[in-house]
Image 1 (cartoon, rainbow, N blue to C red):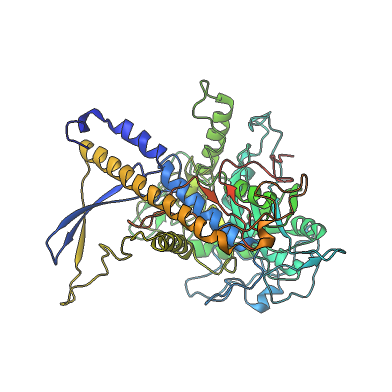
Image 2: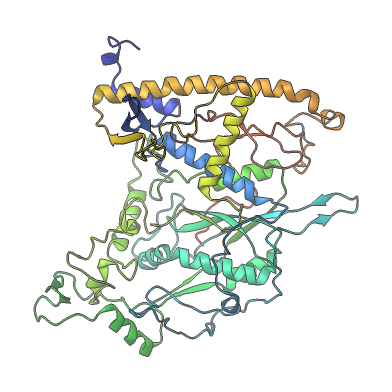
Length: 577
């Protein structure tokens, strides 16, 4: 790329090219000095954002990595090997239904004991012996075919009022925005309780890969891939019986609206009388005398369930649907940015819910407690109601400030970092097997040392101006095109080398996509195990996205094109009551 052409390429043109070629649009430019040779190298690191509005390319890579993580653990037939125990309650606590929430620990870290008795208005939970296994049962048909099905489950929150087709309430004045906001803030507690109860009632340690997404009405709901077959009646019982209680000081009525407490150097005090506000521990101690939870969450009556057998088109479709909206923010999930007319009714609904969330406490350390006359836990100077730093209060998150993807510890036996490394390793092996030399794993790594113990490569930040940004994008695009060409050549050569290794039985099967009509349980022929997608890993090459990706693994795996997801049976639609 000559210097004469560079000024003709604008930053916007470079960004559009980067999006089209799946290259990071906001790379972090670093200067690396080799202290052994004195050479200087400029390295563009991907930003790693998981939001499509920030960087579509990095968000797409993150989504594809989650697709692979979901596929690898869903239909396992052997127990995953892990070094750490399951991060759940101890065995004794597994037999209890203790309701403990934020603020249950005092300054001495002594656990505040609460009653383990279930609420009188809650349905009873069935109790069965729990087997020490995480894989599902195997079922056999009369003709000798064996299956190990798993589940796709969707759970929702209850209704807060009637809504229109666009998700906005029919009558905003009667819509329960306060309850909707509180349920969104504490939805993770309810989800945890659901999985705890399901494990007790299913008879084995249910493992899951779940995504938290909004419905059109902006209430969060959960799509989950659960390993193993669970009776539908059991799931319905667990949904009816699951609840979560928030044991916080009551915050029904605000105390400070037009004025705010002030910091006197040690505590927050009333701005007029100078009286010290109750501390968090004092407010929680008063709660013990009240005996009522500040908020109770329950699941909605609508629940969708589908049995899934892999490998199948249904399994591939369910995984894509499960990860469809991971790259979008909560508020923008159903917003059409290319629409000529803005849906003012829907935007007003978003603003109203955000306004409710802005002043509700999100945790025991939230600054909004000052609005209700209570000092937050570990309070310090500078706190102001409506200015909590938690992401849960942001308009784009609408109460869901934590993780959007929830994965149980024994899902695949690997961390997300290990999944990323596996994918990069497969790509490197494919290149090496085809005679293409892949870059060294530790090239320019800060961990490489000189004989005297000093780091060989010294990294420092480098500012990017307009010309530097365009140059960086174009270099990244060129490098990606070269890597893609090499990887495609490696895949073709590998496919030729493996033709002779296919047995006659497999070769006689119908080609991919030729399954019996209406029967997605028929397996297609096994494909190359090395055709696995992978993201960039700090300068290492990976295959380009958009190629065929085996989502469901095992004998008879059928390759599927990763594209826009479509809901599978029993998984679509909002349930707003």
